[in-house]
Amino acid sequence: MNRTKANKKGSLCLLFEVRAMVPDHPDCWFFRVLPGGWLKHVALAMLLLLQTTGPGMGGDDFKEYPVEEATRAFLEHPEVFYDSAQQQALCLAILKGDLAAVEQACAEGASVTAEGRHGVTPLFWSYLSGRLRVFEFLLLRGANPDVPVVLPRGLRIDDHVFRFRAGDSVFYMSAKNRLSEKWLRTLLQHAKPRQWVHPDGGGDLLHAFFENRSGGVSQTAETLDQLIRFGLDPDLQGSDGATPLHAAIRGRHYSLASRLLRAGASAACYDRDHQQVIHAVAARYRNMQSSFRQFPDEQVRWEASPEKREWEELIGLLRERGFRLKDALLDLEQADDAGDVSGYLLNRRLQRQDRFCCGTGRQLQEQLGDTVEELPPQ
Image (cartoon, rainbow, N blue to C red):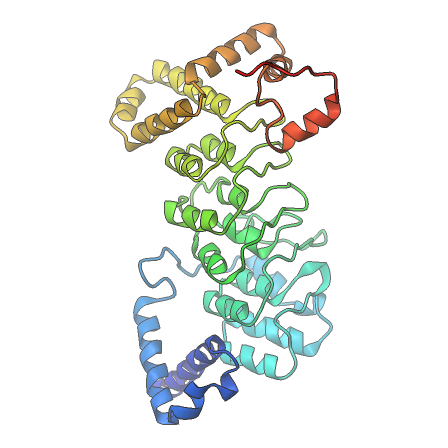
């Protein structure tokens, strides 16, 4: 393709994006008043800006990555999920990242909201294809990011990037993406606040956000703040009873855990093992002390690290809320001595005013009924 044709194609693709952002674009005053030549120059100027800054403009961490072979083989066969020729054409246009072809497929009857077999959607297709501009285009056209996907056995998605598991929605997958938070930020920008709970694990976007990203990009305070503003329940518990605060501490995200506490997350919630977040802190403290005894240089590094300051800030916030590290260390020590950690911690829990806190607490209260006496105020 020569340069003139390439520029025309690029301008057309961008024009579709501009039109998608303007409500009822065929009758909008912008398209009625602005002469065609002006619109062309505006589109070319915006295209130049995109080409200069890339999809991750503004210092974002987004970079397109190659689609893994098994995932590409999956994406090249939309007929597995859609009978409609128009929907198949839309999926293949999405895979190529061709906005003009995407628009053409929609004009010919394809729907951006159509659910194929197993919960597959065009938005899911664009996410797996790594096509962020198409992804945003579909969102602007009303694509639903909350549809759970349950693929049949034998269809595989690249686990390195997406870590797909049955029941994941596009929203949930984007929150645990190892290589970029741009997908999640884009969704948070366009979606309406609501609480989406995973049909299998019971967690939400905050739980997914704190999943291990070993070898990828680290979780950022900016994206966490977006999630908090989105109105998610900071105390929602997954199937193991862990809250996002538990997950943050177990993942050693101490500054983010402090951010959750300041945003109103409760430190009183118990997981299925009757442990509160202070016990997760205590377990981490014991592991650190063991490591320092074996590797003294590690303690020297720790003492000079920003991580230690973040740790101390977290310890202070928990102490202000009545949860002291030394008490939790004693709890774990006595539980070990008793030989029944879960049983010991359950007995400890039943002696506390906060024993019925959060979701697992309400379940415990239903199980025990009237067998637990009221405790005097502590």
